[in-house]
Length: 233
Image (cartoon, rainbow, N blue to C red; front, side, top):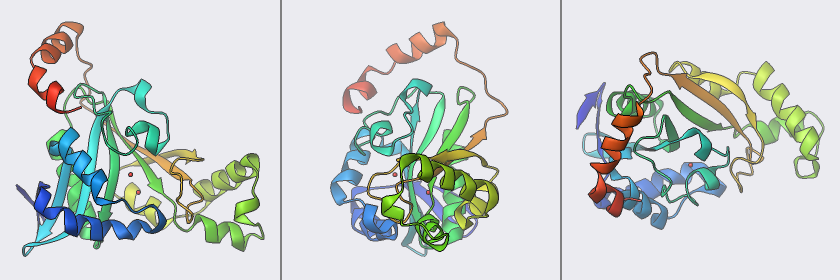
């Protein structure tokens, strides 16, 4: 457990899952069910954190390590169907699977804690695919029918939205030193408010040093038990 501002950040436990399911309702149509969170506890419990204040949980986050070739820019493919079974301990990317918070301060505390816990020299960058829950209403305000967009038109409108407007989510992430790269079409199936789209943001590790082949082999061999047990902005 580490203190960050008013919050205590600790690893999630099974007893927390009922509250975490409640928090995830913030995702609306793409809220997850308890079995997803149980899978996270099984595959990578160290990456599953909660922000607690006065014995109440106000937010949670889940991250995994991935190699570049594992990132397909689709939430279900990247996360093994949402189970986080794709977690690769030596992966050079820290991938944000999901974060939900009732208070912005709790979300900020979780991001800070994730950097403290998980950024190591072998991590090239942190990757977030942030939801754009105001995108659908913006498309409607431009006179388009969101469900009738062609893929090409959706991509063009998405690029216009993320490059010329200041989405509140984007502003929040940029305040944490994440830099937007581009919009991603069809990232999260079922996210009606975002039209399944997301904004890719990254934070590059200034201390990055790639693992040498010898060190990578040694670390892989030294973790047989973890590999046997372990394998959603």
